[in-house]
Length: 305
Image (tube, rainbow, N blue to C red; front, side):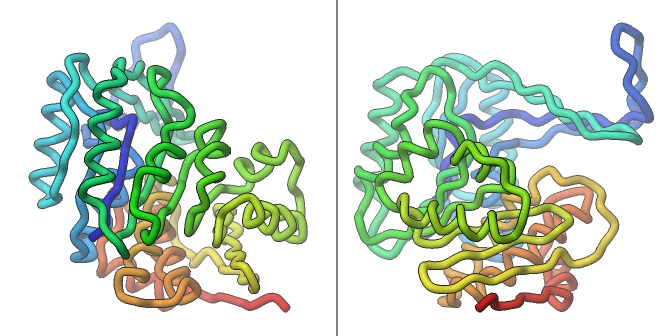
């Protein structure tokens, strides 16, 4: 079974306009809302690929009800723990020149609710399951939360950790199957300026020493790099018209999980990660299976000696 965890979900309000003028009245060309959160996105892409998963996390209020309804309408199982405070609303603004985001204020989450989550993970996630831990940690939760989750979970599962800052650093100590930093995040982790491919490979290997069995470093339009315990691969970014980068990284994670759930190697799963991320970046919404396959044909991976 596959589980995705989103500690800090949101109702994402997408706005499309020609330009934005601060302090003035701005008109919107198009707008829509979706249940947002990195783990939720992974579950949605997996559902598009006909792979079942259970979405976990916290939500509350009318926005929490919206998220649960959205997930249910997608046909995804969920076990979100209910909060009294409302789930946040994020604004994702796209103009003709740029993309910007405003992150809403997270609800308070009590220690009792965190304990409820830890108990669920301990009692339900079994050997050979896959657990995806994605996204930011609300201020009301300790930075050790990912570490606590991993230490409470079955030891014979695959954990994918897609986070940053202290929660990532502390969680990595418990050893995980895969991490997926981008170039900037990798540099932030080591407090180094990363410029070359050699730098990326060097510090990805350091990340492996710190507890990640495999590392994918995403480079946007420049592709990505997969570093395993013994090998290094460079993947391209298949050509297409960029529409929005939102959800592309989560789609890469979903692609990896899709491959693993079909008993593919990490290298063959990497191909699906590249295709999934590229397809979402060139789509209005999260990738479909059909569109991902079109990009799969364009994927090129080169092994570095």
